[in-house]
Amino acid sequence: MLIPRRLDDQTYADIVEEAEARLPWLCPVWTDHNAHDPGITLLELMAWYKELQQYQLDQLTPAIRRKLLELAGLHLGRERPAVCVVSVPEDGPGRLEGARLTGPQGLPFELMEPVPARRPRLVRVLAEWAGERVDITSVCAGGPPFQPFAFGGAKDSGLLLGFDRPPEGTLRLWFQVERPRGAARNLPHGETPPPRTLVWELVGAGPAEPLEDETWALSWSGFVTLPVPENWPAGEEHLWWVRLRQTEGGCEESVRLSGLWAGRFRVVQQESRARQYAFTIGAWAGQRVLAASAQALRAQLAVFLRTPAGWEQTDRYQSVSGPDGLELTVDGTGAAPAVLPVSSQQTVMTCNMLQATIMDNKLPTFGMCSSLANPTVASATASAMGALTPMSCMPVTPAPWVPGAATVLVGGKPLLNNSSKLMCAYGGVIQVNMTPALTVQTP
Image 1 (cartoon, one colour):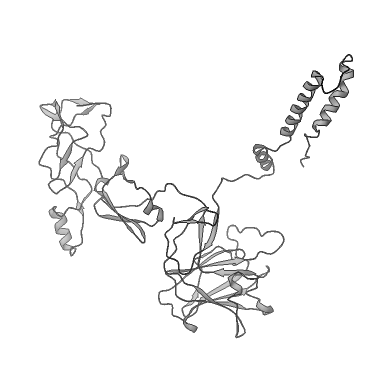
Image 2 (spheres, helix red, strand yellow; image 1 turned 30 degrees about the horizontal axis):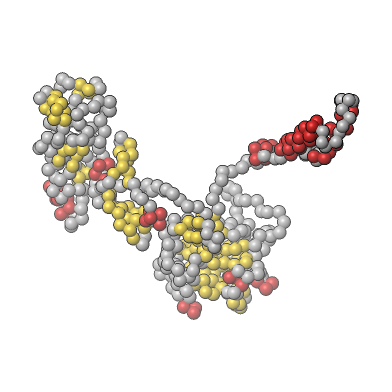
């Protein structure tokens, strides 16, 4: 056990009084101890400085606090932005992930998940037991806590949740759970089973197993996500009903809810300045990818292709903004570079390698070709009923590289530099991507 000690245990007056009491013993000839004496002025100055030092020594700095926590076996985590859940207006538009929201105090938030344009509304909540039903819709909108599985003292009660429309794909519900008083529950670990058994049913479609249950069987607040079939039929009152029952309560405390909603989404308190998206595309033109984020719509874009030489920025893309995000059409033909063979001369070396000239225009494959001017591509596309079918790229390059270094001749031919380009008969443009002779300058 650490015993705290108070270092700042003297006031300014106490320090001055104690110092003046020692003067007759330290200097008997000093008899004037009034405030006008210069020595007393210096003594009071030192007393003020001593009090200042004592105050600083008695403070717990952040570094000392961290050390004390480490002695107790605790370690501070990294700083993270605050995450919370917000309600979205029922008639509001859909929003993409990353869309910015502003709170009442002007604090910036960003959506951590997309908000669908078509969202089901929870319009009826019924408590049912032994063939009886009670409408508790108003209570579930944030009222006093209630026991869904022991409603009104009845045993084995359950909930019926009615929605005005089926969702798109999955049904996501937020349960606000009132934790019991006393010591907090230990978090589950490993294969720890939930404290109770809950059964979910889509009325008219059969039982449903949650895809995700953040509440650990309604032990604390969180989302529960249910799969929804496409043919889920409407039930009574032309609503889509979900039934929730507890078949085994275990030895834990009874669940107490203070609300449940279908229109809540997670946000994070931050303003993202940059973000990256990674996609895998083929080595041919017309590759489409979708950045389903609001930030991609409003930010300046930079596109890079991964090649054997590393990441290289490209401008061979087109972007179109849409309701689902930013759609990119990327030309990936440059994603499979090839090594240039030198055959025009065999005598001049640069950096221990043969020096290329503009006549070294016989190249190997560049991956896939998507040009319909290529007979193999045209034939494969015709066989596929008009669907573009890329084929192996075998460049046809009858002309030399241009322009080359006209003032530097190698074997009577202009030297090949990194600004030269080579035209393929099928419409492609070949350029020097990387040269090993990085230290050689040519005109």
